[in-house]
Amino acid sequence: PTATEAAETRQDMSPEEAQALAKEAYIFGFPLVMNYKTMWNYSIDKDNPEYKGPFNQLSCVARLFTPEDKAVVTPNADTPYCMFWIDLRAEPQVLSVPEVEPERFYHFQLIDLYPHNFAYVGTLTTGNGAGKFLIAGPDWDGEKPEGITDVIRSETDLVFNATRTQLFGPDDIEKVKAIQASYDLQPLSAFLGSEAPEPPTQLEFPKWEEGSQFDERAFAYLDFMMDLIGSPGEGEEKLWEDLARLGVGPGHHFDFAALPSETQEALKAGVKEGFAAIETFISESGKDPLLSAKIFGTRDFLTKSAKENYDLDRPDLLRSAAAHSGLYGNSAAEAVYPTYRTDSDEEPLDGSKHGYTITFAKDELPPVKSFWSVTM
Image 1 (tube, rainbow, N blue to C red):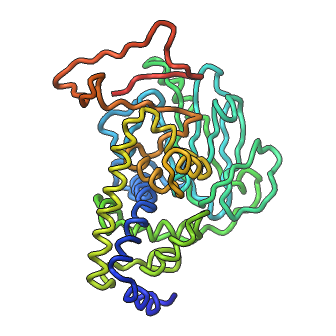
Image 2: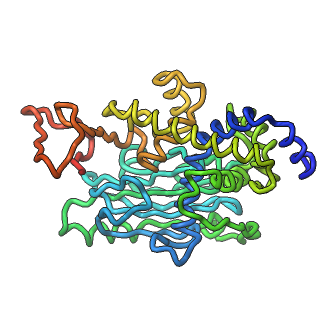
Image 3: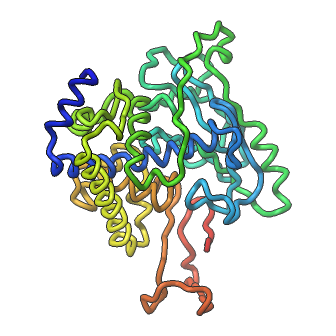
C-alpha cells in the first residue's frame, strides 16, 4: 500500500484490534529484535565493546567467558567461541573445517534471522573429519561445486554463527587457538577462482537503543528485520498482512509518531501484554528442567514442539522464551541444558544463605556423547 493507503488503514483499525495485533506481533518479533541487537553489537557498531568484526569475517577468541560477557544470555564456560555474522545476499560462502581429533567436541551453529538453528557442522552432525560446506541463501540456485562436501541452505540471507571448540583445561588453550585459526570462511567466487559478483546494496542499519526490545520501539527494528527476510514463513502470512496495516514489514518504514494517539496507546498496551505472556510462559514452563530441549531448533522442530508440548499453532512464544532466557541456545540433538532454579525443598537457589551439593548415584553420570559440566 501507499503511505496514504496505509494511513487510512490505520485509521480504520480499532484500538482493540491494534492492541491484539501488537501483542501477537511483539511475541513474534521479540526474538528477531534480540537477534538484531546482537547483529548491531557484533558487526555494525565498531565502537561497541562487544564488536567482533564485519560480515563474512571469522572472529574467534580462545578464552573462557565470565559474567562480564553480557551479549549472549547464557554463554558456556567449556568451549571458547567464534562468533560472526554472514551475509549471503551477493553469493554463498564456503566454510572450511579441519580434521579435529576424535575426542574433541566442536561445532558451528548456524542461526537464521528468526532465529532458528537451521543447521550444524561439527562432531555430532558432520563428524570430526575435514570438510568444505557451502552456505547459501534462499535465492541461490547453483549446482554443488566440485570439492564441496555439502550445501547448507538458510531461509534468510543474513546468518549468525556460534562456533564452540572444546577446551580440555588451561594448558589446552594454545591447541584450541590453533584449531580456531584453521577454520576458514570465503566467498564462493574466491573458492572457485572466478569473478566476484556485484556487492549487495549497502544496508542502513538503525542505531540500536538499549531497552527498546521491551517497548513500542521494538516495532521499528521488527520492520527492518522483516524487510531483510523479505517474505513470510509458513503460517505467518496473515500476521504479515496485518502488520502491513500498521506500516510494519517489507516496503514500509514504521513511524510510530504518525499513528493516531489511540493506536499508539493500543500498541504500548499490546507490547506490555506480549512481554507479560513471554514471562508467564517462562515462569510456568521453567519448572521443566528439560525446557531447553523443547524451545531451540529448526522451524519444523519448533512448530512441532509448539503443537505437541504446548498446544500452540505457531512457535512464536517458544522462540521468544528462548531469546529472553537463553538467546542462541543449542538444539537438543547438540546440547541439553537441564536447568534448576529451586532446591529440593522448592526454595529458590540462594548462594548467600546456603551451600549446595549435587549428588549423582554411582554409575549414573549424565549419558552424553562428548562432555557434561555444571555451570552456576
